[in-house]
Image 1 (cartoon, helix red, strand yellow):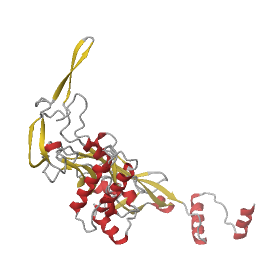
Image 2: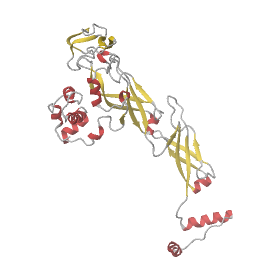
Image 3: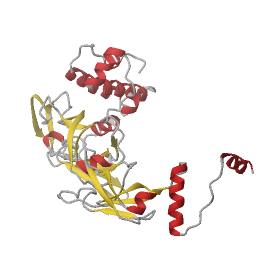
Image 4: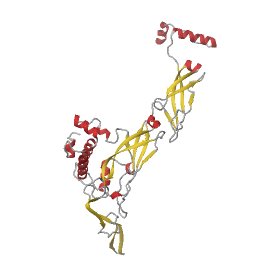
Length: 379
């Protein structure tokens, strides 16, 4: 972040969002290690990504313009303010915009003997929630990088006056046959056409922005509705927000895996919640009415403590646990009793406790003077 970010992208300080986006794409194609063999290409590409991460975000850009620095920019990564965790995008260890450009440069990912994939692949992303958010349901904005439809050509891959024509290399077959002479005779082998990647057609005058693919690396923002009661590890599918298809082919989906962070107050057990309830020894012995906070906002739960409640006993409050997914029912709240014994009592409290012990025929230690307590401490 030492260099001026506008200088890194090669744009003016008053550049529009569209100008910043196009400048990033063009420079990324020049600097990506797949095509640039300069020894510092990888460092330059990383610097370019960091610059784009800041200048493509309105709030980060405003902060940078004002102060010249972005606190936490290196950690944020542009992936949703710390609660979004990229994991296994494309189903195979995705690492950010760099890998998106690798996919972009590789076309549809055709291998020897098989045609290029035109449909977009599914993408996966992790979303971290608090237990309270999982209980209420929440709407979260996710920001991530993907191959998106090219806005210049509408995803068709055609430039101005461009059109799709039969591939001259394979004559529209999508495969080419080669003959190799061996001591056993002529051997024929068929492979995917390198010119059209197995499509059978090529584009004349392709879109200069996407180079005929119909898709470009871009930063995407999508709102995800998380239903109340969702569990850790469950997945949500957002249709059409995975990798865009080539030349207008169907896009993949975005698969959101929910990760619920541990709570300091509650432990979840399916739809039930476990929590601690601290009682005095008098409340445990005589019974009481308590009010405790529930998992939902502003929820107050009334708990009846029966006489003679023991330490470690579990009090069940039905219908105040986690909401059940896509249901109006809830699990139970299970309170684990912790009876607190006072470490110090006043003279009057001791007298009352001694009377209580005498009434029950229980022997207790005699009260000790402050001097005796000091002697006990040194003994």
